[in-house]
Image (cartoon, rainbow, N blue to C red; front, top):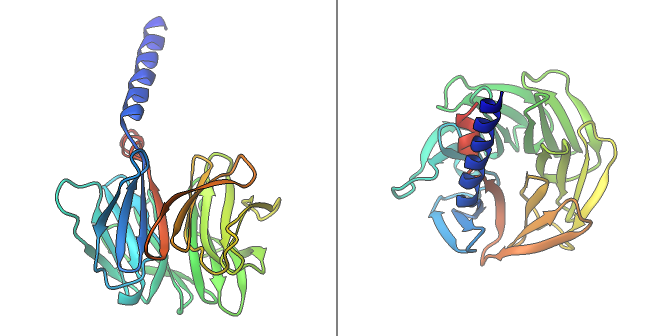
Length: 282
C-alpha cells in the first residue's frame, strides 16, 4: 500500500509539472481566417488565411490531433492538424449544405454539424465516412454535446427561437428553453450547466441541463455582435464584435478583454494542451 501511494504521489507531481510547462491557446476565427492567441504571452498568430468562407465554429479532436471547422460559404467541413511543426494546411472532410456549427464526439469518433437553411443535424466519422442526417427541424444554428448524458443541444433560428435537445440518434427531441435567439452553446463539465449566447441581446446566460434555474451571467452591452462561446473549467470564452472576452462564471459580471482584433470575431475554442494527455490516458 505504501508503495502504491508513493507511486500515485509521484504521478500527481509529474502531471503537475507537465501542466506547469504547458499553456493553453485560444483559437478563434474571423472571416476567411483562423488565428491563435498564446494566453501566457498574448501573442497572436495566423494559422490559416484566405479560407474563402465565414467560420462560425471550431472544435478539437484531441485523440488524433485535428481541429475541425465548417466553411459555411463553401459547403464543406474541413480540418487541419493541430498543433503541427509544419505549416498548417486544410483538408476537406465532407461536403455539407452551408454548415454553420459543429461539435466533436470523442467517445465514438464522430463529427456532428448543423446546416442552417436545411434545418438538419448531420454526422460523419472523423474521416468523413458514414454520413447520416439524424434530424430535421426549423433553421438550426448552434450545437453542443453533453458527453456524459449523451444529449445534443441545438438552437433553432428560423420562425422559432428555441434551445432543444435530442439523443444522438435523433430521438427524444424536446424544447429546453423557449424564445431565445442563440448563436453559441457550450456545457460546463465542472458544474454540468448549459451556457448560451443570446445574439440579438448580447446576453450570456446559463441554466441547468434540463433548462431550469436560468441565471443571467453577463451582458456584452452590444446587440447582434456576439456569436461563439466556449466553456472550459467554468470560464467562458466568447466573441463580441472585434473583441474576445473571458467571463469568470463564479464571479457575477467578472470579465475582461483578452484581445481586440481588427476584424469581427466569430468562432472560439480554448485548446487545452493537457487534453492530449487526458485523451491518451483513457
